[in-house]
Image (cartoon, rainbow, N blue to C red; front, side, top):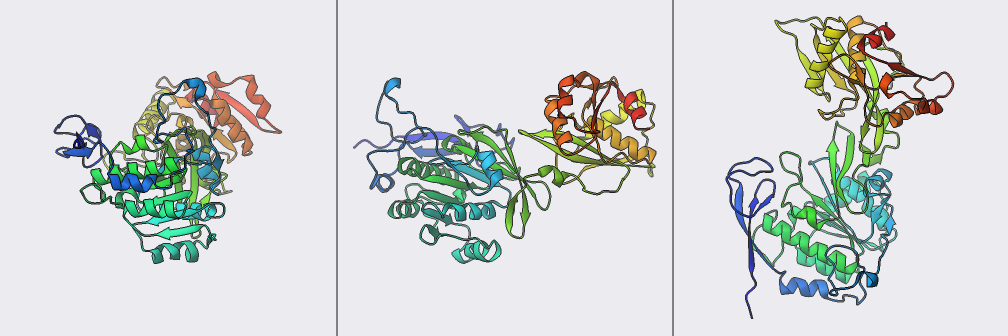
Length: 474
């Protein structure tokens, strides 16, 4: 018998990026001397193949990557099957997945330690056990630790007839358990903790991670099992392990931690939905709770009028969120002014203070602190909050609170003009739907169609430049 061919590649031990030849620096994570040779057998071991193929039904669900092919077919003979979705019991997770999880798909969830991955999936396991055979494999915790969280702290209800729990770290054992118990929903926590007897190397290594992921993927695609994999992250909070994992899975979701309680879910790959949806959760004593009205998390909620506070609307994925920006301008105590930015780009703040001084005639030689309520962080390219940052600074400098029902949406140009921003109509509509009565926007962005969302004493106020903004706030 011919010996199985071995594929040789070069893999970064830090981020898992693949290369065809050795090089000194990784092009992905920029680390030096982390690329090592990786040898991978061209086929999975016979023992694993036998375990996966055992009791395999003649009729398999098609349409997913990894399903065994029946050969070449004409397109007219291909049976098109529509993806069937079920709810996870968490509305925000359903939103990110694409209105529920697709049966037979493979989902990878990653996040920093303590971000709530296991807490979130424990709730999902509880919901799924009510309708299908569910197996949760916890290779990083003992069964006692896991049960204590699910039953005592989260107070979840599991269907004893359908729910199974395992702490094995052997991928072959998982295959046998799934087939023997006819599991339809599998949660594997985490992929870096599993080992396969078919290859050398320790758990978490590139070889083991790739092999274990491929075995689980093939098992689930051939037996119609829905799989959720938990993935660890590297020092840059990016998904750890070989990048080929992204090709194996159907959906990749990452949990961001913005402050002590807020969690944001984002999908950077989704074969069954878009990647623009964002899910927002709040970590509580009873687990992860979906936040149906996330804008309230990013507003202080105070009914008092405080100086240096302004509200804007940002677009995060497919959602429009009201956020509160707070500014504090004080006399300079040292030889040079200080600028502190939390959640706001430092370069945008520098631009805004320069424009205020040049085109608004406002002295900006102050120690300035800027922060976003709720721990939200915005990209450096975000410009829609320029007008709100300007308004908050003016309020703090003049010691004059802004109206609590005012919202500021617009970009500030170097010329002092207020510029158009993308998709401003949905942002205005969001602000009006929250009962805000004064919506300040650039004149170039205003058009009559916005008036259909105005009710009662609400009004949209178009402004041309920073001077008109200063006058409007006096």
